[in-house]
Image 1 (cartoon, rainbow, N blue to C red):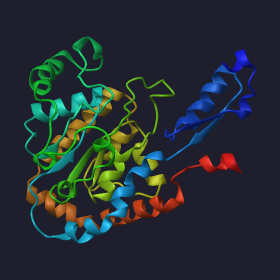
Image 2 (cartoon, helix red, strand yellow):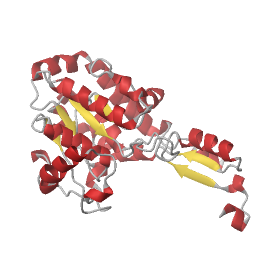
Image 3 (cartoon, rainbow, N blue to C red):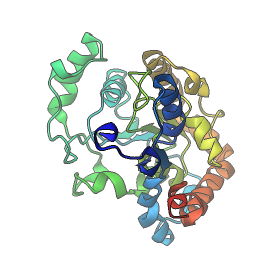
Length: 299
């Protein structure tokens, strides 16, 4: 299109929520020796925290400090269909962990109201896929008791924050939008943070990220703290997507093998770090880096 219409590339601005696209694009343009357009990073999903921050008085920080054993070990919320969510949810159920946490799998988010057929699923072994089709699909949408009566379509997925989930469980399994099954693609191999990550930060939970390599490093660069006290975070450096997936799943199983009392002790040992992360999110939300370098265009 640029060649066809003789457009000056320096006049083109591509705005993306992918924090890694600029670096990946630089590599790609160098490889093919083509003139570059401008890549602008927009931290767009921080806007989804607006309702939580606005109503912060309803979600008192003191609620997290109540010294009582919580009912659930984890929270894992999932909206649209993604293959990595299929694998994770199926493995949670197949391992008998479905009652240990708040698990949602809505699927009907307005993008695709039906789970895909088997022929459209590429990265799942046959036994697990059969389990998914036989056990999970007939029960979709999976919801928790705390979500009964909620409208399970957009904007529910993006903006909802059910306070009790976070005060009544100890850690969060974040299945981000992107998972790089094609690790050579500049689009798939991204760092694409959404409300799925910011919600447990606001809800003061340690988290394990089912996403692309480098996502924990990026969160640290943003000023957040991660949780090696809870999880073996070496998964963040594993490039192979299947190996990374099952490293994460095995780590979740290991943590879930702990008793509620053991999780309780671990949680309260990092309470200061959790409070720091929540305050850091509020600080960023107040305008520090919401828009990345987007405003530079207008300079």
